[in-house]
Image (cartoon, rainbow, N blue to C red; front, top):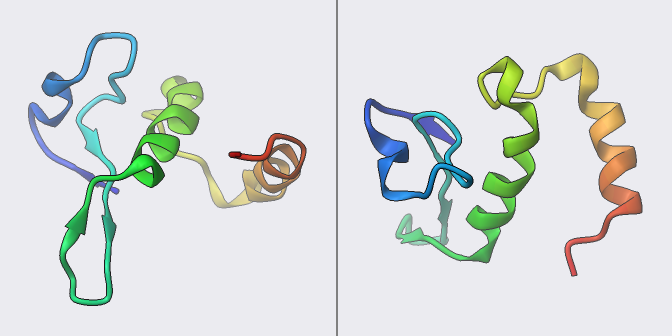
Length: 72
């Protein structure tokens, strides 16, 4: 996850997470823009009031939510 000016502009307003961009890398450090990144983006949409970020003290809550809401 990295933030850069104008990075969210290639997504519709409903999918935009500010200027944050999500990526996954393989072992060769090549960028993989896969469903993994799309899942990150969809989850972070719910954190708009905190600039789409989750704080460390909320990670337990997020883990419990993720356990109840599998990605498959």
